[in-house]
Length: 269
Image (cartoon, rainbow, N blue to C red; front, side, top):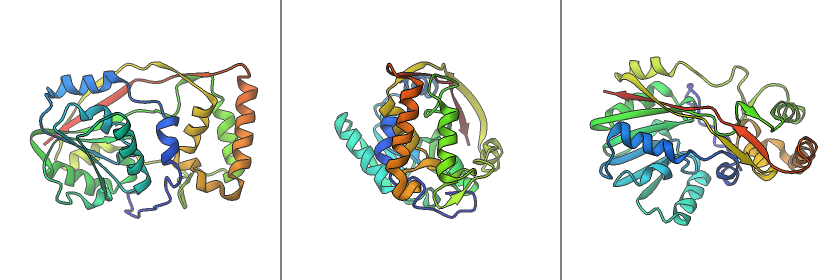
């Protein structure tokens, strides 16, 4: 989804199975920080918009009576349901809808979250809908994070980018379309225009994670700009070159990523 409001169902086609393996998980400290900032006590409801495979829904679910993950990609929701079952998290509900369909009869929520998803939506429309879905005292949270790439890394990210471009062209892909200027910014103005006040920001420090070559490959395929379907019948060829590149960069073993801090902006009516 873009601000133009045209949904492209191929945006993350084939990526769901790679997402949880290829992205760094949100640390437990993030859920604890949410709980402290919002005085969460296991009551109320959470709505995670553009939830993907439940990357944030699942860590936060225990702090609510019910957690609702909403996404337009059915494969992502199936992966989220699988991961919830594996973790024995039983208070989640998965809703296959576009964010632009909110409020969709889903009711009121103590917290509405957008974690690495807001830029894909018709942002003005979705922000206004989210504001109207907040329970008294509720908040919207915009999570600023980068879970596929660190600021300091032994992963050869520049070379990986060059390899992707060699296969897909120099302009960043996004499903069937292109993003020559990247995704939209300026979300603060969008939230304020929707009648939300803030933000109040809290942060969770960055950390160093260790990643195997398989996880790095999964991370590449988890991105809309290098989703598996974009490579067509050359996907296996691309993966073979990617793995060769990784072996050359680190013949002896895993990679390290220094992830930047996670910043959360809380917005209230």
